[in-house]
Image 1 (cartoon, protein in one colour):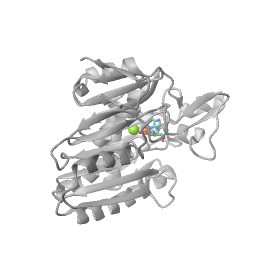
Image 2: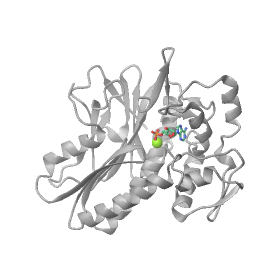
Image 3: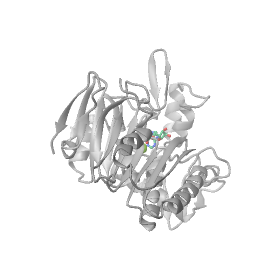
Image 4: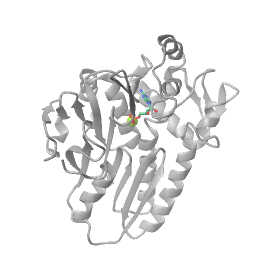
Length: 339
Ligand code: AMP
Ligand code: MG
């Protein structure tokens, strides 16, 4: 199998082929629990890069559910039911509530108590008892969130987790900074969230790799050629533990407070908004293929790639001209879903 360094570096790797001319500003960071790669072209690239780095540092603190000094921790450890939010937090929570409604709670930021109970990816990871899951379900439900101006009200015991949306939201904010500095092309990669701006300097689309759920972190099943788009993936391979031969992964179904179980291994979303793409990738995984496909049919604002546990792939119609199976993707086949 062909080896690359991850989706992040893959994009960069491919992009280098088209961008030998023109100065590039680049930086690698580890923030928001993920490897971040930033590559920018254009006259104001250094300035923009600095501003982006500063912003991501703030998000790393304020959207973290463990950093004591950050805003999310102060929301989750509030003494009262109501708490006053910063403008940035209000914007993020406002979007999160809308996306919860739209996905009928398949994406739900109040999943936090279940995330903490399972502790997947932490030293506390374990399979909870059935009664613990029952108990925790009463502390999940976006319908209980009330946002009025900058005032958020949520019941006692309720907590928020932005793991499924913060990186997408951050990439939207990065896009605004790139706009402000007239940056013509860039590749912004926050773990499984990639934003490619403009086209490559040779005028060709960017080529972004889609990770193989059955491979190592450097293996891809295919490549999507995109211009000015977000490509955002969720999968059971990102964070999981195994117990008695069962894989317990980090994408939880808010209805059961347990890892979503269906025929999917991963979902990738291509769309023009980071927060939406991020919430959708998680939500469509939770919904399962049939419901997710209906969701796609009733929404015109994204395309999707579904990767199944039997090595089948379905791509939605809008990607038919831009998806190609990787040469190295041994065993995978794909078909196109029509509207
Ligand atoms: P993603 O990688 O974007 O699919 O997000 C997964 C992360 O979001 C997990 O590690 C949890 O912290 C959190 N999460 C898990 N399930 C959900 C869900 N159904 N809705 C919202 N957040 C979730
Ligand atoms: Mg997500």
